[in-house]
Length: 98
Image (cartoon, rainbow, N blue to C red; front, side, top):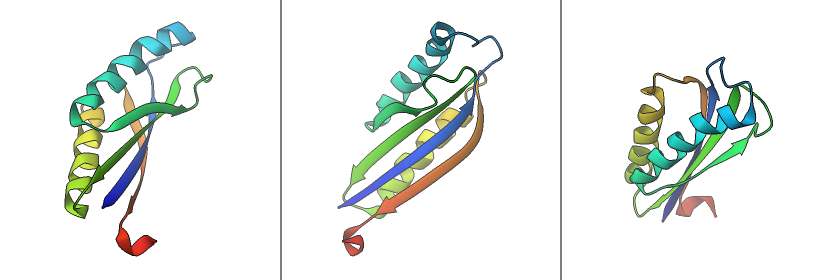
């Protein structure tokens, strides 16, 4: 079994100066990532206007499949015109990491 996680650091549009406006950007992104059958949540910067970190976790039987899922999530976020993807941090764990 292989598990992988990724953290996506995002810059939100300037009009996200309130938490309500911020949620209007974050919630659709989180919901759209669920189509990849991964666990996803806003994991950091919840109280910071204009920035957020979204975390994604995936589990699969093969290392390749976990990496493909994380790649798909990254491409999905990078393709969203309303946000700017600032950085991505990834980790993949397998049986040899015990």
